[in-house]
Length: 438
Image 1: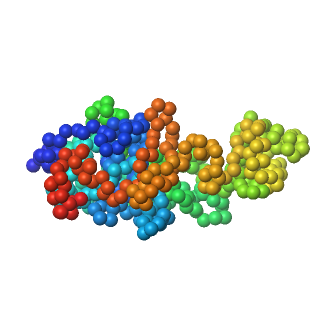
Image 2 (image 1 turned 30 degrees about the vertical axis):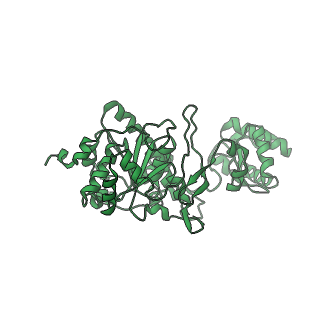
């Protein structure tokens, strides 16, 4: 049997349905269609970013219970309805389709899945052991759509790109990606154990790398007419932003230690306790240091000559010297006696970077955040009312992104996608439903 014989006749005959068909036209990616299969969190957020920028995104969920991500807390609960807060923001702007992805067990499921592949430009997946569990191979996907970009997200990467096959086959989560990359080694202070970075930071960094890879491969596919696989490993995404940690060791044998809230290689650069909260203050290089010293000495009356840059701030040795420690003690005391607002006003008036450590309450009341439309409302299909979502980042001058819908109900768009994009009749859809395929 040739590879083309593996493609159902309906899929072979299928014509492309232009995107967007079921989502509003907006953003720089309008005209792009993305298929997403997977769950928490790196894969979904790649699809979310693409949807924010205008791609029509079809999210495949399991019939009945839907995406496992819907069960991740914290939750909004009201009148018997339960909505996962992290899932809400990462499921917005998507069409929800239910489909049993075990295509090796059902010719109908295979036909629907490969139809979705043929109608898509990018397929994002972070399903575990997709070939073993579902019978979905890259060869089959490329046979159905030679131009498609496949973005594969995993903890350790795909063995075809190198690495230990056994390790590549391991399961992973955000925490595991952090651990294998070594990220917890640089968080906190030396007297602390390695510390996890919260809020699924590894997953979200992985998503950023995956989105860049997806769009880069898509641009190339438009030129060549041939798709490819983008292999996104969680630990590699985190390690990439830790490049100096590894390069310092590889070239100089230096193992960087946990620094806590203040940098050790120059100062001031750290988080300080103010009278009513915390502020971050930074001054790197002689120019900014000079402006910092002008502000600090003008406010305290201390002669600038007491804290020369080369003796107090320029090198790790200067920072740890008696003069360097004296500066840190004087600055720490000075900050503790003033409010965050006073410190922001003072240092920013001298063009020295300084900001309070913002809380959600601060952000919700901050005119700068509000004016940049970082909190937007959209109708949520689970709670059946409008709720707040985080806005679109970054901004586009001509083709702005948009949050056009909130969380869909499980399978809310199944019938519309099958009819409008894949060309199924109502009778065929009912048959699929009766067989448990959707």
